[in-house]
Structures are given as C-alpha cells and as structure tokens.
Amino acid sequence: MQEQLIALLGHPVAHSKSPLMHNLAFHTLGLPYRYLAFDVHPAHLAVAVQGLKALGFRGANVTVPHKIEVMPLLDDITPLAKQIGAVNTLYYDGGRLVGDNTDGQGYIASLLHEYPHLRLHEMTIGIVGAGGAARAVAYTLAHYGVKKMYITNRSGEKATALANGLLPLTDIEPVKMDAFATVTNKLNLLIQTTSVGMSPHDAASIVPRSWLHPDMIVSDLVYNPLHTRLLSDAREVGAKTHTGIGMLVHQGARAFELWTGEKPPVDAMRNLLIDSFS
Ligand code: ATR
Image (cartoon, rainbow, N blue to C red; front, side):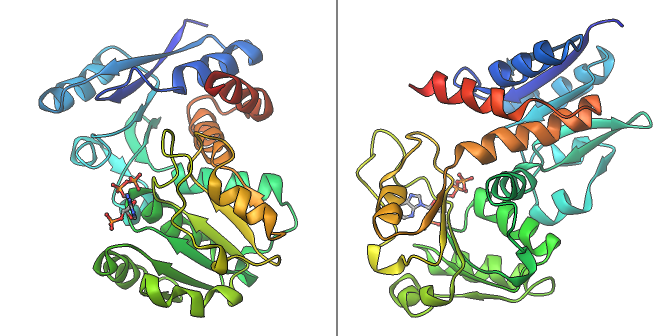
C-alpha cells in the first residue's frame, strides 16, 4: 500500500503532540501512514484545504485558529460538529471531504474507558466554563443523553447563551458562579473546561473546595500538569478523578479510526504523551 498522508492544520502547530501520538499509533499497528503538521496562516486556509485534496491526503486534524473557519470549505459536516459549531477532524466519505468534531466524543470515550460502569443517562453533570471545549463536551453529552446538566462560567452571559442553544436537546440550567454551590450536592460529575490551573499557573483552581464531595467524579480538561490543583483537592475530599490527558488521547483515537478504520493503541499513546510532558 502506498504511504497515506494525514495533515494537521493550525497556527501555530509546533507545540502539538498529535504528530508524536499518531505516528506512534501508525507504527505500532504497522500501517503505512504518516502524520505531518503544517503551520497555515488564516489567509491561506482555503488553499491549504484545496491542497489536501489535490495532493491526495487521506485526512486531517484542524486546530486553533481554524476550527470554525474551515467549516464552509468542506463538502459535508457531521450533525454533531454542526451543533458544536467547530470541526477538528477531516476525513473522506465516498470522495466527499467531511468535517467532524471528536473532542467531546473523545472526552466521553475517555471517561467510560476509566469508569466503564457509568450510565450517562442517569447522571447529573456540572460544567465549569463556556468556551470551545465546554461547547464540544456539552453538545456531545446532550447528543448521547444525560439526565441533567448545570453550567457556570465567569462571564455568566456566555453560560446562558450556551445553555439556551442546548435546551432543545437536553435538560440544562445556567447558574451564576456565586450560586453554583447550591447545586453541587446534586452532581455525579463535575467537568472543569477552562484553562485555569494550566502550567505555569499550577497552583490555581477555579473550583472552590466547597463544591467537591466524595460521591462525584471530578474531571479536569487541563492536562499540563497532569495532576492539577483541582484534582488534588478532589482526591483530598475523597472524590474520584479523571485527568485531561484522556480526552486528548481519545479525540485522537476517534480521528484515527475515521482515517484508518482501525482501533489505535490508546494506552501506548497515553504513556507517550505523559512522558512527553515530564
Ligand atoms: P477553549 O476553546 O479552550 O474552551 P475559550 O473558548 O477561549 O477556550 O474558552 C475559555 C474558557 O475559560 C471560558 O469559559 C473562559 O471564561 P470567560 O468566558 O469568562 O472568558 C474561561 N476562563 C479562561 N481564563 C479564566 C480565568 N482566569 N478565570 C475564569 N475563567 C476563565
């Protein structure tokens, strides 16, 4: 089989761990694929996407700042990516270039990988933050079906806008940050989606300890550091924890399946990423 090429389009891309992770997975499975990162200026995005088609690339990832702007350049967009309003993975379906969003799917796959007995449709979930990551996770949870979501954000109007968009799909309520403590006792899962606590601000947490209790799982989408201040607070109160590296690995794993039809070695990918941050 001729070598198949997969691209990452972003600006910048030098920091991305995706080439490392995917090339390891291709090598481990003996697949003749190669993953290459391209720093594409926003002014050149349209010609870059045409270039992928012209050069016979098999698929791509799209990252900041192109996740929204790439959408009108594609032949199709999956219903989930359309709802989220952003695309991170391009693949071909019958010759048509399709955009999907695997971030939220990766989050759920990672959560269920670590906690296989969870029943999403019975869960009451709190989401902290209302940016791109929160959108992907909240829409994907709504798509899969959950019992109820509460969402809070520093800028309350963004949480309200996100909740309003989701209301036709799921039971979701925006709550002001200073009132969120009144709902946390109902939560089975708390998902921190903001960048607060990311290195070098390791000591910071946006979640007061009073929101945490032993009967919840606490997820932090921040993966650098792996064990954030929030997760150490969660462990101290006896809550279960879920680190952000899982979403990074599993969003890649879902994209890998769309390109190759094969399941990648997620544990090896995860170990490689953890090593690359230490
Ligand atoms: P991403 O795509 O990573 O989600 P984003 O779309 O810029 O990034 O969203 C960032 C999220 O982190 C937002 O919810 C933002 O809150 P605001 O909407 O109030 O800006 C939140 N965030 C970032 N820095 C924060 C801080 N220092 N304190 C509280 N929230 C913060």
